[in-house]
Length: 394
Image 1 (cartoon, rainbow, N blue to C red):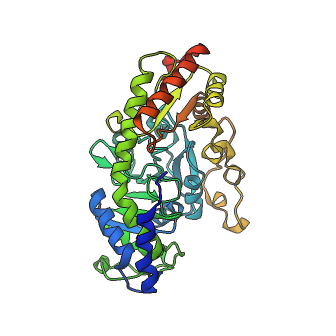
Image 2: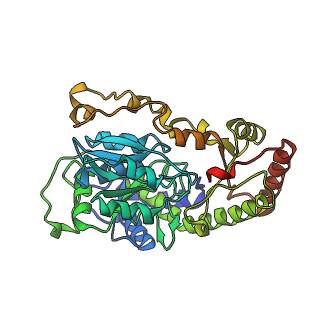
């Protein structure tokens, strides 16, 4: 979670003094414009649009990409419910894909879930764990699928040389209070495609959209919704963006400390990463669900079993599983060519992994010595309980 302090307070004063708290009409400057330009530069992407939330960013990207009724969108079974809700808001339906031990989409299950109706994939870089983007992009290109990266829970992380959210056709980011960049609530959508960006801009502003750049895209106006961000959010984001890389560096340093300590014993095995050189999220895997549950209970501060993370687990997505929308005539499940069913055992591999895995907070604001002490204490507790790990599934 990114911290907010005096610098954010000071950045807000000029916005209040200006009286221009919202972005209106053809305005492309102000705090939001500066943030979008700096974000694009830092992330190496051509176009960035700030939105009111990460969910709004996902929906805007889906609509801009032309995803709609009759389409299926592949989403992981372990992610915040918004990832599955976004396709429904665009008129499509989500199809759930198992995760592997990296806590991200299993490319093999992606292949199993593709149908003639599949239009897009939303790989989620979950809890600072990056997806296997090489394989996902290969599968997408071979099957002519749109890739919308959900980088809401991994803002700023890299997969190899690129920032996550800049590899697919679109990237969606969240600036919620609990994310790597924090303006209370907010998000962004990024792309290198001028036409897709123009469509996302229109959709996020009821079709009117502010102008001033990219008008040569010649994209006809279309109706949308209001996912606009405010200049107040922009002012905070400009400060937060400068804090991002130092914060990630602290997380990576603490990951290295903890994983090194755990590696000296068979009692606590660090879960695998798709790019361990850029790792900034840490989880451990046990042989049984009971061992994982006991470990979480004995190390309550900063440790939780992944299965117990509420609506990050597909079995807790009741509105999606029960296929309920605001009005039956507007229910995307009625517009599909095949019957979509969600059963409790649909993604059994995901449930097994989540029940046996615990996430450990890296405490990026704690001194490294304290993080090392906490890691050694966890290891001693695990040894005292004779916890065993299951290597065969990793």
